Length: 297
Image (tube, rainbow, N blue to C red; front, side, top):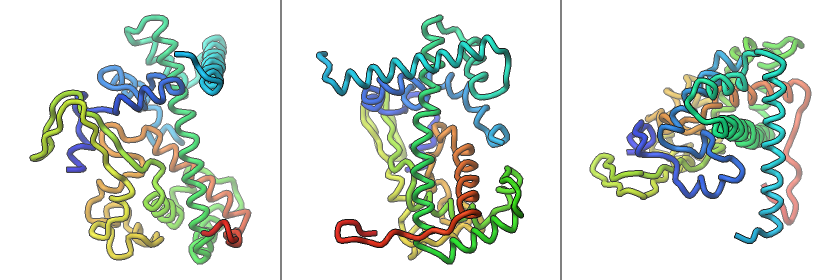
């Protein structure tokens, strides 16, 4: 049932409308909040640039501040776009957005909106999740010094004092296992939500129009029937044979979501995590801070 819902490609199933309303002032109608053909077009434009090979009413004061921030962000993004248009061609994500917008049938106003909204989605929404994931990974390594030493030894052996690059991180199996296990226990997104835009059916369950369907990622990631009796424990060794060898149903490992709306930036995020953790481990050792009467681990 989880697979059928999360991998459903019908445009009649999408992100809940309430999320777009709550986040609209910040993220606009970018790829994280939009639905239907408009979302499909954005996905088609942005996705190729984030493949692994490319990775190498009366407002209160708080609302006024949020609107002012949104205006500043929009101005900043459009200034960068203008500089790019004047400077010339450069093959990167921004250029792909510009080309995708130019080749669409959107009006002039909608072109700016398309570019601004998706820049905000990618750079703002992607920054915090990666930072939080790195924090949890470091916490787990601090809690498990043997694994910290194993990964550090691997990093030092592979890098040999040189700057970390993509070819190096591909060889870091221990680091990959640790990051996969960290993302299992502390996924950056804990709930995958969808809303039916028409009456739909999944298996023998009828989902009426307007109904929200939630998949709890953490529940799937810590189910002993899927991961074994040590499902709640930190055990990177389970990923020694990759994700397919780690659990009975690989599609239930979804730290970046799953299906047609799987996180576009997952490859970039994984590379960033590996480079960051490798750099930290090659230069520092770390432990958890001592617990206090008010803060416990």
